[in-house]
Image: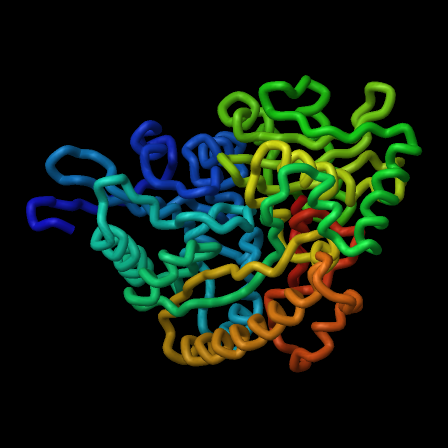
Length: 430
């Protein structure tokens, strides 16, 4: 931070209190989910707010001489641990057993969205000193409010270093991401797969086509009313059949249509004009993010889930020049479809020293386990580089210590893109 610049810090409890243009001028990186319109859609639909346990708490840095926004941290005061996708239920239980209050806590994240992205949003003229000031101010605010802890979720790699140097403890978990390895056509991608995997992809897509179903990707501005209605209905149906309430309240997708459609993509499975199933995506630049999947109750077509969530989106991604496709949280079955282990970074601080010691030991053990798991799974990639067969589903988990609260959970192939499993049960994602 230059000596000539005066920086002032403030807190906002609603995105509506902030200047739209200045907020979107900040560096949001590859992810679209910290954009003004996405946060505004959540507030507008009352998906976040005091009644949901996600109270907005934006930490802001302003240029004192020009009133220009230099940086921001999207934080939330939380009264639970739902919708975070970096699990701390074991920490909360440990705190309760020790008579330590765990809630409320402060979380820096995008609600209900397990996607890596910038969490310290900086203006082009802001420097690392501003980033560190925001990180420190966030912790100081938690102390002043008497909050138990601060949790930075799905941070970028450079931010992890900044947070380490300001007193936070790094955490390593993992997801499965598809990256374009130079393919220019879907046929090139399929040719890179082992013959068994290639046959499976073609068979799954053939079963869908034989059922008379057409699967296609539709960008937000080109979607019809029936597609928007289906996206909302499928999301609520998926949540409902798992006995969970949806995170995104009624009106969220409608608001996205009004203000953020340019970033929205829908993969529709249609027959005779009816939308039978679909998956929701968001796109920014060369990155695609799969978020929610659903279908009509009566639809039972083998291969449909994989076609709508993986095969057709990958083909479209290659055609569009997309380099990164994140299909949400967890799911070993994604490895067989070209999604390889990717590190997920977060950073944490706990106020009470009795709990802090246990958390830090947990993080060290978990990091070691995660690194081993990623190494094993990386060797199971479906690409033509050896004759080793795929790892049996769930086999890697058998080597973990009994009862270890690892943030990597087994997931059945029928589950949704981005679906999360945790104690207690989370609403389905994807």
